[in-house]
Length: 400
Length: 208
Image 1 (cartoon, each protein chain N blue to C red):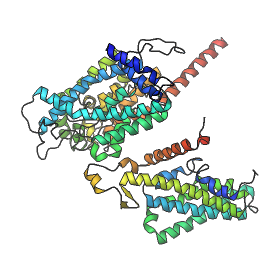
Image 2: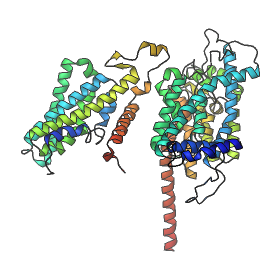
Image 3: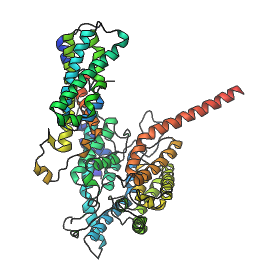
Image 4: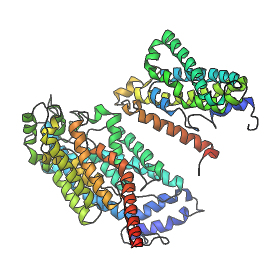
């Protein structure tokens, strides 16, 4: 470690203004703060709150909170593949290796493209490189189906980073959740490759591990099956296996199948104070109440209304979305009252889209994106009503 | 009346530094609506050039006889008449395209560029400069339309003017057309990219 530090110190003059590599200053800076703790976590001037926490540590804690889901995703990818191949034995470490090798290229592509753009833009604007992509880069492979082609992930990541984040000013200024925009771009641009029965389960061996899927195999997600179900009995048969869905042993996007691992992640986020419990709780209430309303009026036109409110929470990406997506501090509502409204609407909208729009078997992504758009409006209304209330108080006290 | 501008400038300004779409941000609705394919975008562009040029000339000829308080109505009547002629011509000679363009030919009447040019230029200038202004602004509009449609058709359908451009070997290698390019939001983003590039070149247009 010391040798590395010395090496960095030695080449530093080249990157200072005037040095021959001064154009790459922000790259040097980024590498240095990535490898070693910076001495200052708050700006020397202008910052009134001093805290040992900085955006890098925040990001690392969120990545840690994502790890249970990620590890489980590796296992589940292999598990679904083993099932598809008709295997009867499930060797744990071979499966973990398979899952790791299956997801690794996706993680690499997402980080390479996203960080590449961040580096170029930082260089161009002569700013420091921001850490904002650390979380986004791991989220992107986690919310995409495992069979998504790599070049699509690259295109979608580039689109989201440029048009949602960089053009609005970079990390902290994105109007929408970058990872979700990547997912939405994939969903709308390549609908055939992003939905249906063949994308959620890996069907090919990776590096010689695993077998080929049996003929006629279809790997529809439970929500996909429910969307095409015709009777409440059929939906009941699918949701009878709710324990597996809670553990996460169902087909789905890489990292979001396991409600259990999402709960572990939520505990880490809440314990470390990184995410707002108000948003999570109100989204949970929103989802439960809308699920109950939908379940109270079941109809064959909307087969997902046969699901109970509890089932709505554990299937699909709902839990993942409200814990890791809706709580993104940049795009969520900032006012405390606003967080309750925002969270409740995220939860309710997710179920509304899931149940009443047959085109989208899963509505969590669109619900969070929609509420990202409305978050500033919610904040505005909350602030205005607060101003009005306090003005009234001043007026009444002045009169008496 | 502002200082006199040269005829060449009247004609050339709308191409770049006074472009109706990317600088004045007018006529955006039709840019979103008709640019999914190149052919309708070209027809739309030509139609707007024709309507704009002739309505400019007619209003310019009438400019001293139109009472000020009913000028908008007169302008609308002139534009509507020309639009109906264009629409009938398209139905007679290019029926397939006119079906694709559907209501958007009729909606040229409401295109902000037309009313804008009639109000701002034709009412105060002689017919010849008014004609040049109409053609110039029409071309400025059509060029943007064609650029947007070029990218949307190429990336969204893999074709240009209906002919396949992306080779089959690409599709066999796993390339897929971008379905989002067909949807209106991407037209907005393509226009934004053009504005971005345009402002990056013309620094005097950048706002602080």
